[in-house]
Image 1 (cartoon, rainbow, N blue to C red):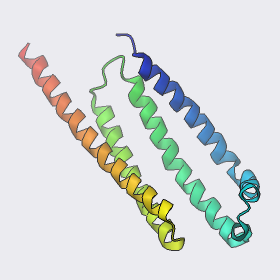
Image 2 (spheres, rainbow, N blue to C red):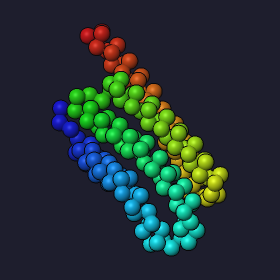
Image 3 (cartoon, rainbow, N blue to C red):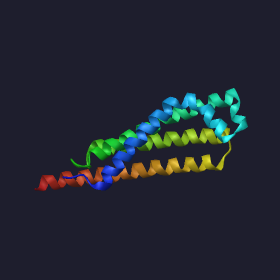
Image 4 (cartoon, rainbow, N blue to C red):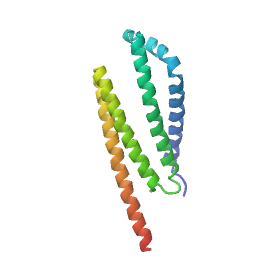
Length: 152
């Protein structure tokens, strides 16, 4: 079965996102000061604040890159059949990561009251719930497919 055009475009976009995210995470300790200078955010120049921001962003980079990798693996399964247990498990892992990220955003929200951070937290919770829902749907599709295979 030939892979649909949209899936190929999405897969290549995810590849680019992963490479850009990885390069960004690796170079973040060296580029964070430039980022602060560009946006002229004076309080961020404090060493303790800089260390907190750097640690927070580096800690968020790993799960975000993991989500992109899981999505790439799921898209790679489309030509052979996407309704496999590995994709269900990947969606559950993505949902858990989103809930962990929402807890991190909640901690950020408490430390620095910001409406955008609060909105990000609710986005992460919604994304986690969507991921769990999609995993349950795919799991049910696998059950239906296996039952159908047995009746033939």
